[in-house]
Length: 108
Image (tube, rainbow, N blue to C red):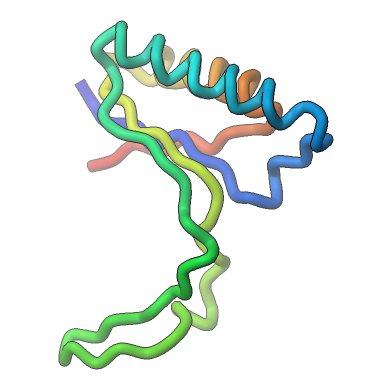
């Protein structure tokens, strides 16, 4: 079994305001299905209202992240699954619920 990160950046979620309640309901339903199936590890979203800080090995702290890296924002789900095919199937379910494409990565 491998752990898979299923995620999307905030900019990918372009949903009309009147559909947001349905998106939330559908996304929570998929998470409940993952919990019931025993594959759920955790899920969440980056709190974009909290400023990002970069912490160095010497414990110094600076506002912001890596200047050269794209921002990390949006939502994510980690599931533990027996195959990439099953991970793709779950990512498709999440994509449908969230109304946006999902990126799929294996966590080592």
